[in-house]
Amino acid sequence: MRVVVAPDKFKGSLTAVEAAEAIAEGVRAAAPGAEVTLCPVADGGEGTLDVLLAAGGKRVDLRVSGPLSQQVDAWYVVLDGTAYLESARACGIEYVTPSPETALAAHTYGVGELMAHALAGGASRIVLTVGGTASTDGGSGMLRALGAVLRDDAGAEPALGGGPLGTVASVDLTAVRERLGGAAVRVATDVTNPLLGPEGAAAVFGPQKGAGPAQVRQLEASLRAWAGALERAGGAPVGDVPSAGAGGGVSGGAMSALAARAESGFELVVELTGVAGALPGAELAITGEGSLDRQSLAGKAPAGIAAMAGRAGVPVLAVAGRVALRDDELAGAGIAGSRALIDHARSLDEARRDAYPLLREQTTELVRDWLARRT
Image (cartoon, rainbow, N blue to C red; front, side):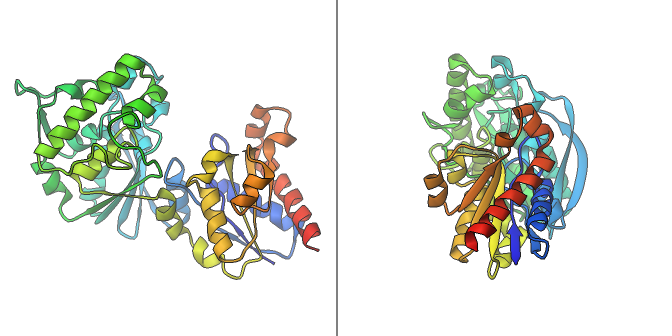
């Protein structure tokens, strides 16, 4: 029996690579003769770089400015001439205690430092993943690290952050374009929110980053001023463009000033993992993630794997930290059976702490049940 193992990360417990190894051990315990192919995946968010390392990428470490200008250790991955950057490595929300003050002050300067380093190292393509940021600065900090010059009406340079961005009157992108050269930029995200408006970056994601109603209004005004300045500087209009609001608008800044394309994070990553080539002819595929819920059905990795397996005629099982979907919802997504780690632990803390052995054991039980039903 040939089995393809393609999980996402179990956030807070296991990387996708670790989860794949645990599931593979469980498969072999249930079916000792099975041929198991490991294809850990990601949806373009946190954990994507770990998957790219497993696919043969090279890790590049450096220190950059964090979301509040503190120095943080960050890294990116280079694979076949493409530099893969996670914006959260530089300005992740884990670097702050979210508050109204941090919501206004957080910035993406460190993301630009990562990008500048990759370009200086010869990268001809940049893929930027944009989830999990502490910032709502429209990517202005990122562009400033690449050489953009921002001015207010008095000719002074505004401070970093989404709050001060409201005073911006003009931006010069000349140095940014020179530094970018002919490099192509792609943004990996499954978020479709625009930059501005009731579904935009400030309104939807600002509260998650500590913004109260007053700060949301201020950030919205800042992003509106920023979008106008970019357009006057020759950038593409992005105020109502789908996905421009991802990552606190860092996606929109890249789309406007760097001619970046927003693409499905899952599709960008999965093409590198070999899963598409591994599925045809397999008898079973197993996927999973920390929480299998309604969000999983909207572009997350397990739903993507189930769809790919369905097209190849391969049945799919799922193991997750938590399963919040009914059997009929799982079946509708192409998942024939599931197990939740939390159902076999005394507490959530235990499920997280012992995720590896629990995942191995529950995979064994799930595969045994599936084999018995098949027989």
